Length: 310
Image (cartoon, rainbow, N blue to C red; front, side, top):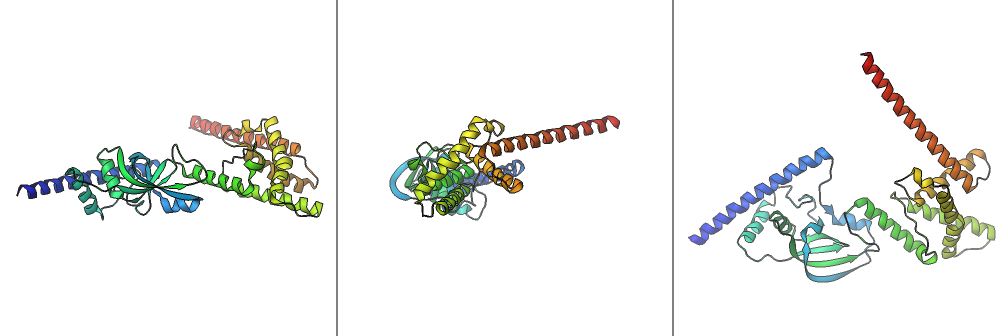
């Protein structure tokens, strides 16, 4: 009889625990909508499609930090980013695990993928949810590490991950760090490394036509870097153009100025030097910025005068 009473007590406690966790998740969801914060777990499958997984290895049983678990293989829609439940259809599963936890009984380890410093649940989402709700800092896990060609640590940022993967792909394809160790080509916008590959291909095409012979790709990369990228980067540094674009990189400006150069050559029907293109680009940008400041100032003054007129 006592055993049945104990079970009923733990079941009642687990039910209250779920109600509290679900209510907390509901309130967080409202706050996330108001602040336009995503607030969800990361879909491992979606992330995996964006990454070049090079290898995997079984790391065996480990004790891992629950805070480092940021995503899930299949249950990323069922929990928020604090692993609070977002739905009630698996309530019984959550409560059963919580009851076992309350009774001090054994819970099997969760199974996770490890990417850099982060973990993604393969099996055991409800166990992670209950453990986190109970203030547990670590959890036992069977860890499978997936190796990617760049470090992944600090605060997880989707955009940064995509940028790092694109950069790694560019460096692997061109072997630029091997061919030109001093090269440090970093872009701040996703999708731009493809443009650099196009630049290499176009430059190589014209060189091949001029020399009337095929040029090996490694040589094409070196030709582009030595004769196009590096000279333009030197001009960007000499003219301190980056000071006008504090959130951008040298490679960003290289792309913009090269595109501006093509526009100038098409407009003026003559050859334009790198130096001239860089100067025209900077002057044009400053004029646009001053015009923007003037419009903003004029609008503020008009609003102020209208208020005073009333």
